[in-house]
Image (cartoon, rainbow, N blue to C red; front, side):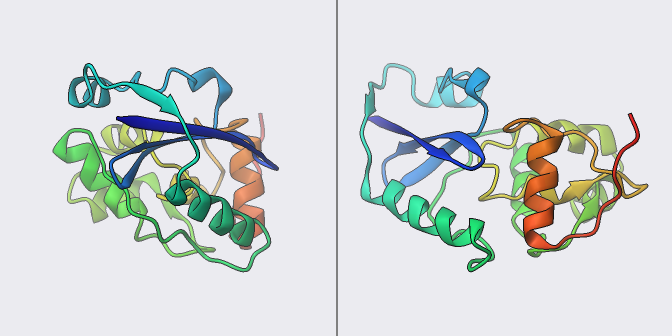
Length: 174
């Protein structure tokens, strides 16, 4: 059984998806409302029912999100399960190691993942199934500019999160 729950926050609508005792998706974009569009999830949970329900784990997320948005918590301590290729999972796990208030470039993240494939790393970052929990907003361009952000309202959400954390970045000229 898969459970999902949507809540409103200053980041917009957040939808959580839980399987068993772990979060498997955190969706910040209303346009990503197809909860199991990820092919790994679709294969893993083929035939599973999707039920709207706010669980204890989701309540823990709501409490931690409120503390994070007030600057009182530096991250999230919640069980999650990653579904993706081994490479994507390695990138996502490395996202979780980027400290609060710090940023790394896509190139640096690629080095940390043991690859020179910056573009492949960028793709994996863009497909992060648990933004906020695995803080992909902390990955910026080599020149210090924000770069892309596929969650929420895009770069404006990324800017808000980095400002909240006091992280250094350069405004992009469009």
